[in-house]
Image (cartoon, rainbow over all chains, first blue to last red; front, side, top):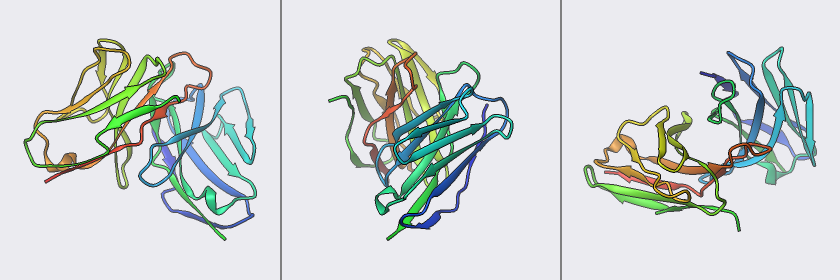
Amino acid sequence: SQKIEQNSEALNIQEGKTATLTCNYTNYSPAYLQWYRQDPGRGPVFLLLIRENEKEKRKERLKVTFDTTLKQSLFHITASQPADSATYLCALPESGGSYIPTFGRGTSLIVHP
Amino acid sequence: EAQVTQNPRYLITVTGKKLTVTCSQNMNHEYMSWYRQDPGLGLRQIYYSMNVEVTDKGDVPEGYKVSRKEKRNFPLILESPSPNQTSLYFCASRLLGGQTGELFFGEGSRLTVL
């Protein structure tokens, strides 16, 4: 099954800067990768999906890249705001063609005013 | 409004007292799943269901049961809860074959077993 690594240390940045979070995976290359946001005590909320044939995807201030050679996805939030403070999870299919996602443990982002 | 509803949201119980956490979705999703989330361990899948009467074990199924008699409901049953089942539980659903594979999560059920 897929193993996913996200930085367990919280990322602290200043408001207005760009936050960059990393998701690394081992084993096979997935057909897609998803990013979710989770606020404390709440359920994760889907943000973006990027497919293996897409190098980059954007949605408002969010940008996701997907490098299948490095087995890595980067998640960027530009012009970050304190309201962006949350834990961000990446998720991949458990195996090729699977509908079952495997989640990383998430990285906490703290944006300071 | 599209949503996944879990009940109860908070529960304190004692070891051995059977309990059920209900989950209902109003989006006609085929796939439903239960997760538990513990500090430092992330989201771990307990059971999932690809459709009515079809259920399968996830990564941590021991001590749990599920059923899928109707498409919208997917209850999680703890026949004899133990303290190591104290956790935050999430139900999720998704449309199979959708464009994004987006999982919709419930608000969570915080369970404490004394």
